Image (cartoon, rainbow, N blue to C red; front, side):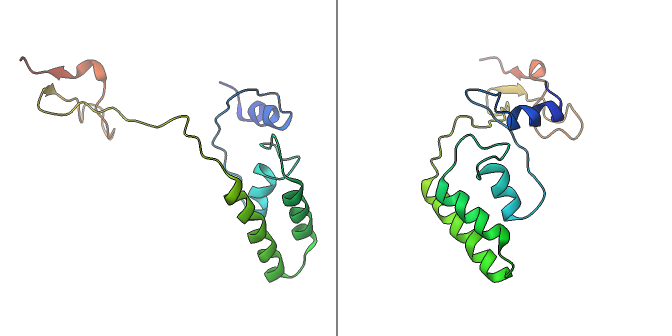
Length: 126
């Protein structure tokens, strides 16, 4: 497992290839998140749209709060329209429950909401 600093450096230098899963969440507002995930040069950006990059630069120099907000909304709309969702991983917490289960192992680990350890789950004799 990489340290946080090495991981962020790897993202920024674009050294990770193929499928990468990460869950960082930068502090800040919409502009901060768009800069990190959408705008060219962001540490998590492997491709960008020139029109969205231009809107980002426009909102960065806008001093009027309402106009800046409108530009950010204008940036988010094409992102929403161009996004393709392809689920590659579905979290599934396996729990041993049902009529064939003898010992489910619920509660064997204090404050753990799932059945565990799996080795302790037993089945009823047929």
